[in-house]
Amino acid sequence: MQFGKYYQRILHIHELVSKGSTGTPSEMAKRIGISRRMLFEYLNLLKDQKAPLEYCRKRKSYYYAVAWNPEKFEGFPTSHN
Image 1: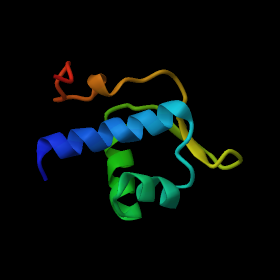
Image 2: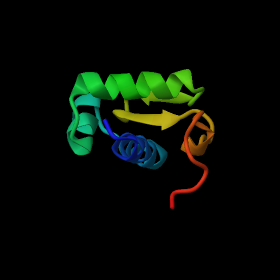
Image 3: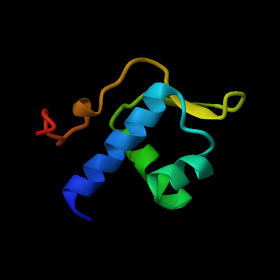
């Protein structure tokens, strides 16, 4: 996979999580255009990078327990240019 596409998916996941509008894992995967299995791989990767991801069953959405920015992700560029 191209790095640009990979990074865009991370940013899309971040945007949805930041807004608290991910929906269920199946809904989120569909919005992003990936399989549910691939979504969990991305989420686990983010958690490995210390993203404080949590899931609220009541709201049916992922959220950050504390503020987090994907630029903290090791190896990602610090600008989006």
